[in-house]
Length: 143
Image (tube, rainbow, N blue to C red; front, side, top):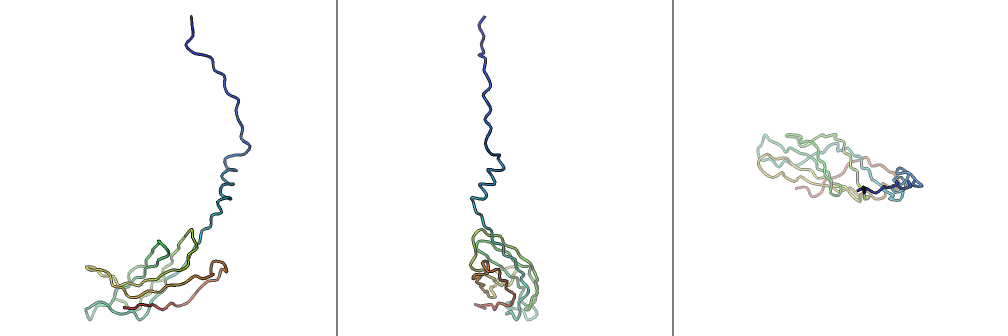
């Protein structure tokens, strides 16, 4: 009687010189990945213009913060030309940013939000020196 199956022998196991964890560690070291962390607080604005038409109604400001393609915004403060937000924001980016833009807007319910002004902050060499900035920024292009 002939057999349908041929006997197969197991191959000799190959043991690598390194483990997967060691190889992944070397790959991560070779990648030299740097992340930039921008931590900020949008504190307040003052003396904003009133873009709302009614005499009893005032602008409802919020602040948009743009860092490259990333954007965050504060809460909207109703009827206030001197809003206080005190909102912390964190950005993680792979490329060293050169600037951050703060844009203040007036929230409208039935129409497009009104532009109140903006300011750009240039980072300069802050990432290399580790210097922090605390201070006021003056809005430009105020409507």
